[in-house]
Image (cartoon, rainbow, N blue to C red; front, side, top):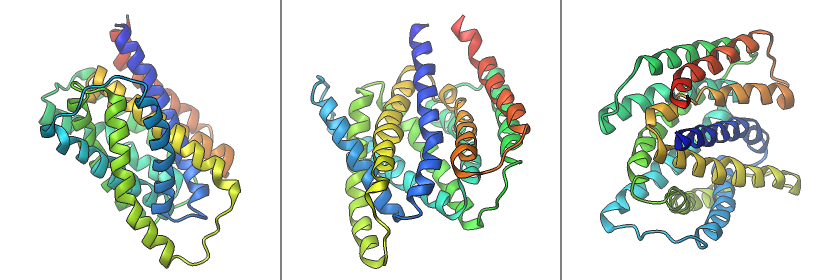
Length: 289
């Protein structure tokens, strides 16, 4: 019971952090290209996590499990994250976060097929309420994104959902902090050549030191802390249950977009928020009592 409560806390931290990423990355991507933005995230996160990892005693990863760690780093932390940032840049924070709300459905489907997890009435009700809530919230946000940005965001969702079920499997055997650290290092290595090429072909990059706090926040909070909390929660409870918290992310994204980016919302935001929170409570409250 205590483990479940801790897992729900980790999930809340994760999705609040990821919700804020849409807003912070939107301001950074106006000055710095996508791959270079991702590279800075990974460098900061990798340094922080590696320092922490050195203080812990962890099991050596077996050779047969190398492929899973590589998939997590390459598909999940590299391809999926770059697609997410690129989709956000081409559309806007609200539309990208709306598409990301598909994750509960896709993760649950992958979990059923790969992990043989069971779908329950509570999970279905939570997803339905969450989807209605997300559409209610973001349906009142002004602005339209390009089709390409939306398609790239959808690709990000499927890649991340697939990797999430792999994380669920591998963290039953290894420390989630260990898996997160190695995965981010792999993503860093994959991103580096693309960032170098991007910097060569991109003229007039508007780099200045005022964006460093944003990079630090993206690296430490949205990447290092959020990924560790997500992987930790996956190691404690089912992937399908973890996915039910995804609607918190667009809720936070829209709220912060309204506060800091001037993206408009109205009273429907309150109604949509209540649906999202109500769905999560309905799905989890019986497990906490």
